[in-house]
Image (cartoon, rainbow, N blue to C red; front, side):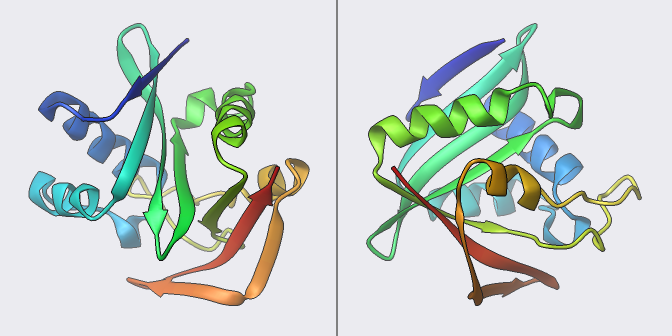
Length: 153
């Protein structure tokens, strides 16, 4: 498993990340075109990316960025790589660079992925890592509901 830090994504990486996003996140927040996904990427300010590669294929993605004067993160792992300590490793490394990380987490298992299977909420993973949950701060976007999470080092 390789962990590659990049500040700029190449076209083929953007394509792979869009496919990973659409495969692993709930279908209601999928990106239909690369242009739509690029617009999302362009909205990220002061972004740092970590690509997780196995056999030269992207199987995971971590990014942190600035939003409303706070450091936020996103993380997606291919279903086959989940449960192997990769997410924990990515968060642990991020904590070395940032004293506070904010994110959104879906709290239930009611959403379907694009292949029709249920999206499993990663809330248990974030609880194990010591994140604080703010159930009163919610995101409602494209039919998806999530709550704010935060980790302080």
